[in-house]
Image (cartoon, rainbow, N blue to C red; front, side, top):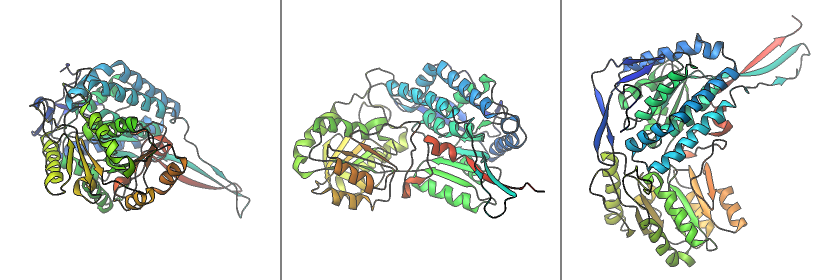
Length: 490
């Protein structure tokens, strides 16, 4: 692996790299080979307290909020985007090794990361309020102003370490917040690299961005800390519900935004381009080895095309190249760690033995090393089967029993516990309109699957969470309105 320009055994708090108070460590693996590539500290509640105190002081007493104009914050973020671009090749390689992502995918993710910081930098000098005309008394003037929510604690997922960091950090910085950030314990290295770039730009006062490392213990300390004003979380439904309960039971109730799981359906109508749709459906599921909260994992195929469509799906899945992630030809990588690898294999067993689903292709470990599993397709799967209703987070696609009516699909999907994303493949605009109007999903793709943009909001309904990332909605989530009432006759 490329030499890191920072000491990964240190943590970044209050503008300085320092040792953790903990003697405990975490091994960081390369999931391609299961080899340990780094050892990082398992931070303590004491480390977290230092980070929270630094962020609190930076927010209330430091220049980031109290002296910097929006234009100065904008320029700092643009400088940071330039620094990421300058170091992008190192970041791409490190993240590819640490996550197992194909290097070609990492280029797209770094494009998105850089774009996100430049996009949200444009909001930093556009925080606006409103003037409210007097309603009952002509001498009273009312107006609103928007202020940053305060200190934000972020708990990130392992599946998109640098890109999801940008989703969270860029709008929060633009709004004027200060940050305590905890990456997924499996994938801390590019977060540390990002902290190095924050430090190197010289544009961010001490305490504006702080990093703690570790798992459940330090995550709980972050959620519980009274100096944190808002929590942003990406992860599982179970952990997300625990975060929500925790933030409601602390001394100070604080704002919470959670992006949780999904079991995203796709619907293939009779008039779809079958060959193109097969490739889109498979990539919609297998992208990032299926470790996407919005992955297409429930596929509805109309009865009239079912038997014709299955061989096309099988061919698309079997055409995916699995190999060393740093090779240009690799299209899919391994699972992130042994725990996820075992979880996915257990769900494949459940699909075969408990759900009695037929395997179209895949379903086995592969390459003889690391955490690799073949792209796996089940078919004739009951819509109520476990593999069709529970989030697997791996390269497993359930092709459901054939359907006859779009209305029946919509009725079933509206009762799902999830509501993050969905897709429809059709040329019929009446069917498209009905599906996009009636389905309660935060993102709905039409004749595509997976593309997301910095200017469009992303988030879900029900157990897929609440709050929005990306778009103006994300930026606005880090601002709070104040009402000012002034008697001008005084």
